[in-house]
Image (tube, rainbow, N blue to C red; front, top):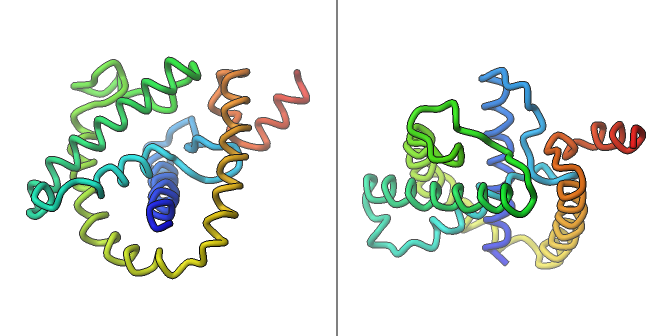
Length: 180
């Protein structure tokens, strides 16, 4: 159950990071999540769980953790963007205006930043989560899993039907439904 909590917590912290980035960059796109109800960016949860699965010899020094972390996160980011694009017909992010991008899916400046964020997460946050996660009663994991599955089902249906990421906001979805 600990891995489920790692995924959820990193997805939530990714959402908070996205909200902060949107505010600082004055982004017109403010939703910054990939679920209808839950404030989650699953790409962060997937990426961090992949990083946590790296063997110890690939993470034992700052620079190894930075390098392999950046590579893993960038690969996950590329794969998730590809899924969103090809399967759902949406793009939650677009780096095409950024230098050294690959199809707008990934870019060098963010890959560098991911490396530093990975080091911060693995060395600063993960030790606390390793202690905290096993203490959460299993019933809460089952409840959260049920909510996550339901939210994912509805989010996928909305995205497949509308191809509009801004409908991941309940007020925007209600407005859209009233117009449809």
